[in-house]
Image (cartoon, rainbow, N blue to C red; front, top):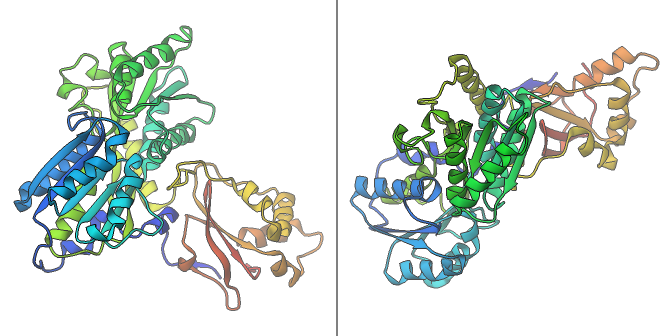
Length: 456
């Protein structure tokens, strides 16, 4: 008999620490380890209306709350990353926060230098194979907020044609795009989803030009919802689209208050939401921990996701999103939190995960299972998350399946299918059956290869 201890989002196995609910909030404060913070933006400014601005606001809030000294450096070009970090070091700051995936190498190099071992580093949108003890990589499940945005786009589209305008295809942006496309197809499998990457996060004019091209490409059946996920480039795209009367969705923070001037900018009524990620919390929480004498986040990668309110979606504000659509989005977000829906997107690279059929077919140890699964005609329900217990060939060799009894075989196979994505540590197997290889993600959940066949 298989039982579930708890159903969880399998991708949280990758989370070493949920920053939104860190234990430091409930322990007694110790002497502060820091007195100052220096923030280095990605290319762009602290008033860019999205990513850099939200990080800056997180820094401003925490330094005001705890009376810390602070400064910031706005990066003009990628070639300035290392020099800007060095400026913070030379100025004697205790914490250096670097913003964006493209700063990963420069951040790791500075943090790994023994001369900087007493300085703490926070890398936003950065993940490291083995971060040193003074560095925390902060990553986000952009695919989850993108998924909700895609569902909204599909629900609001009348033409069945939507699009995304994206910046440089770093993992965070790829996660936004693939999550958006998966969410749209969750609502309408036949929807036409287009997307364009632009090699800049600060080219608002190119974003606007791209939006116009997408809208005007097919006057008879135009794109009628556009998602912008690429800093100022994406914001320029959705601003132009909204001014043209096309529904748009912002990114990172609620762009109603930035790009659309709290409703004063033309087209604000066409902003139907923003796919939000708490970049501000990625700065605030680890700095707060250091103020409390807590270094538990450092030396790890932390993941902010739907389950710890690290990603979500913004209100509709002045737009005409129906209440039942908003309620449906809330329900989808709750299922993402619970792990009963998965995005099908790799939470680190942003690439699409393989299907169950492709994953099983590519593993020679699962050839018997693959054949039995095909013969039984089993199909997983689209949009639902599953845990698959996959007996290897040796496991099948040790049992005799009922001959000429397809219903009995189907019952045995279905005993290996559990609704909801569960970690291997949360699955209770019959005595004598163990997990050989666990926690293998696929597009609808997770597979655990086991050394026995579970009988119903």
